[in-house]
Amino acid sequence: MRERQASGHARRAREFEAFVAGAGGRLLHAATLLTGEAPQDTPRARRLLTLALAHTYACWDRLRGEDPYDRARQYLATRFARGAWHEYGGFARPRPDPRSALAVLTPQERLIVVLRLYEGVTDDQVAALLGLSLERVHTICDRATATVLHPPRKRSPAVPEAKVAPS
Image 1 (cartoon, rainbow, N blue to C red):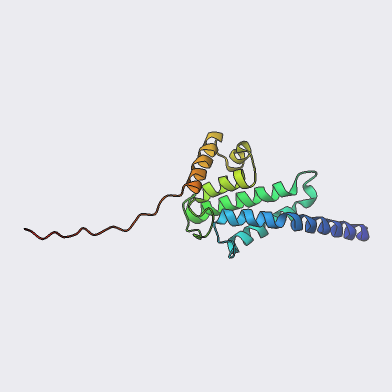
Image 2: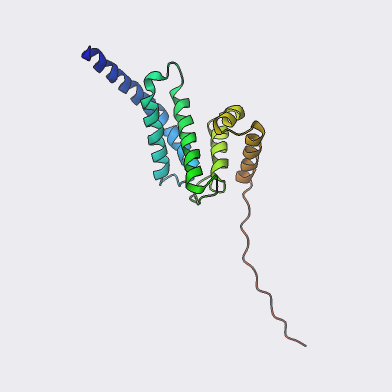
């Protein structure tokens, strides 16, 4: 009995290691895009990934044909959303690293853009995951995409007015 359990645990560990080897890099990249960190310095993204992988490993035996990548991605997204909500009192704009590709977006916009455009999740699935209406997800995605493609211009410094001598 113990030998069978030990071999089951070893098989589970090998399957999970293979999953992490194949999906870990992509999940880390998605987490980095979500957190808005610079690609070289990703402590929050790595923490998100670790939590998502730990959750996936904990429910590995209960997946029963479900895609473990989808489960990990879903946990990653909900954990990010919950963290942004608690940390910033909603989806306020934290200060992401300016070297991040999505630094100009709010956390909610980043979450929707990453799920829709990077991960290829449908509007329906994103709306269900975040508890938003389909129209709201579509609007946020469109606005965020426009912002990324055409970032707001930085204000130019004010030019002091020249003083004119009275004649």
